[in-house]
Length: 160
Image 1 (cartoon, rainbow, N blue to C red):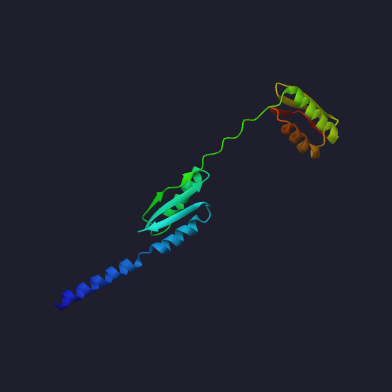
Image 2: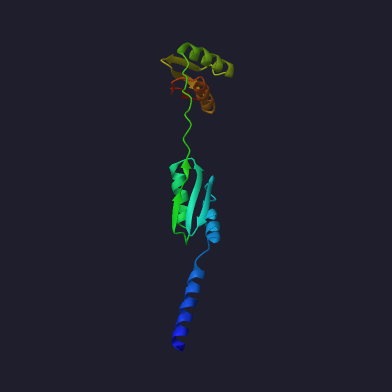
């Protein structure tokens, strides 16, 4: 009888040690939140070692990264990924100015900026820049052409 009691007590102690070695949900919650801190907009709940992710992210890559980060925490049994991906907003259609408006706008803008060596030709919404320009002015010249809302800008400028 003494051996049975000793064996039973030993089994009970082993059970207590094994149960005590499991991380608590609060410790798992903290570890998961640390892993997810790099991904904004996500919350995590841990119950019984199961993580439930909620929130909204910009793309599928962020959603997958959050799930993988949660799975990487030792002691997590499974992950329920309830994260939603934001639907991108539809941009307003680009309005292309007519050729005569483009020509008038660019001629006056380049004259005002002192880019007298830049010639502008326009056909079907496409602006073609010819002539010479300083390398330091190129960005401003191209930007001005793009702000006039053409279909396309062709740069044939020779740099000084």
